[in-house]
Image 1 (tube, rainbow, N blue to C red):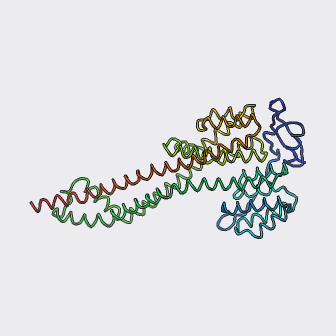
Image 2: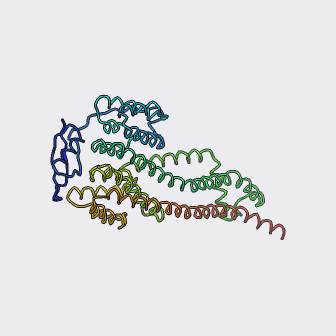
Length: 411
């Protein structure tokens, strides 16, 4: 037996907090529902000790495709009546992912030892996210594990597709950026020095008579050819990346960086609509699986990828624990549009929040496509203009003096 702290709604809508003793978390949920309480948050009072996790060579990275295949096959086998332990063992043996296979070996051992599947999955956070674990835990509690696994596989596919759209949108700008930098270095280290020698020789062996822009260009070219400059540039870039990542990984730095991104036109639109789409899809899946609303909000908030919007949702969860409703609190958000609050209100009134909010997810997933297309259409011409200006400045600085000298000689 273990003790669990809980926060729940009573039949008249009041907030009740307390402690309950049960065999496990699922039993605690059932005990609260038997008392006609609607659980909002249920947490173990037992403090976790030190834990060790063995990392696999090359990291414990599991591809989304492998995880989706595992989840769908697991759902099919469980719904067909195959015992859970046998299903896990079979899927472990046929998995093509070494990291997933290693994790499943430990999960099978934990389940054989009498542990819950959700607790066993929770020991591998690099593979099974909090969303995954919480949905499985809710499925175990409600006896609908096969349905929850099916929801999980679908939600993972949608989330993967969303991330794929964002990555594909950035491929072209990244390629153009690399080409721009490469072209600049080739021009400055190979082409400009040779043409510079010709111009200097035509100016009686001195660069003093050349235009100021040409002199600056030649000075930059001579500097960039030196090994010390290249070494310093590499070290400088490495230091900048290291410092930036360290700063961005701190809570304050992460919040400031994400806040800055939300102030950039077009980029902020893509980030916001992506966050709303992910929130709606994940929140609907968690609520449909029977996860308490506060726990569903807190789990969803950590999966949005933006600290600013995450904080807004966490503030909502605190207000809900104090007796408010999500639809009311979400209206106060600067980043969630009114349609989200209105749809949530409808869901709260009808008791079908998961069914209603999934419509928001479908709508904003389409909106993300349009926002990504708009971002690509803005970045492409901007980068082409920057590339053209750079090449134009170099061309004017190099060929302008040559043309002037040619005119002087012909005159």
